[in-house]
Image (cartoon, rainbow, N blue to C red):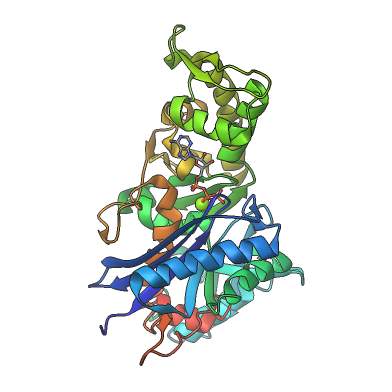
Length: 410
Ligand SMILES: Nc1ncnc2c1ncn2[C@@H]1O[C@H](COP(=O)(O)OP(=O)(O)OP(=O)(O)O)[C@@H](O)[C@H]1O
Ligand SMILES: [Mg+2]
């Protein structure tokens, strides 16, 4: 058991999923522990009831500990919500004609971070998008090259400090340290995006219960990220209002009979459901249901389109959209997305998993599994699981640029 253990806690709006995995080989993971619990006290990706959220996180962690037989002391944790924002920034440093080393790159990234970041915001990720040496752009790996002036283009993701702190507290109440927060779509992308898509230009769209998370990848790097505060729960609530059903029933009806395209459903298709007002079950047309769903899903994709256009990268995504998250299970959603966005769309889920993987092959678990791959990417050498002879995993802090670079650069 000398291979490193990685742990991810995906705190979603509808479910919290803790996964424990052992790193086997270079990019291979064996899932050892799974703890899936309905989330409480989380709305649109953020904590609204600390006690309730802490309890559901604790239950999820306990389950994962029980199924893996390991004690969790440290984990990567997913982050989303409309409090997250991102900016692209440039950092410039002088080199004076010598060979560029890791410290210079770190200084340039630090300079990029010097953009006005308000005190109440925490830097979550600083992602390098490319380097410019003496005006020559498109440089991927500046270390070892000569130059006088090194510029880095960075994508900086920040989040509201108070919201991040609440989430940290939910996890630390269970005695687990957050080694790093990872933005939802970046975790999902590690699982669903192929190398070709990443290079060609594609957008990852994870539609969960309370959020729609976007990440645009071009030339192999993240160029833009965005979290929208809409998701499957809004579809459910539209159905509850439209058909006068309790929310739990609307949720069942959506999953069982829903379709995102009204035109795909026949006039003569009905299902029976007991509404608030009626004693006896009522017959509802599936077309009517699809009509309600289509309106909301179309609106979500129009918002997505608006965001992609606002980023300015709309012309640079020939590989189109990779759709994931629990709501991507809705029949017809791929076609609707493709119609609204005018790009090819495919639906993706975690694949080729080894170990305790029964429930994890659904698009709902892309972020959860992605956290583990993110941990791999960060080359988490220290054990994240304590107990026995294992110590506590060394915390990884992305704001600590030098450490981060050591992990990312060869
Ligand atoms: N078969 C299905 N058809 C339609 N929607 C579905 C289906 N299965 C799950 N969903 C929806 O997926 C959503 C949950 O997805 P997911 O588990 O990805 O969300 P989450 O991670 O908890 O939330 P978020 O990431 O938004 O904070 C719910 O709104 C649920 O109704
Ligand atoms: Mg999610």
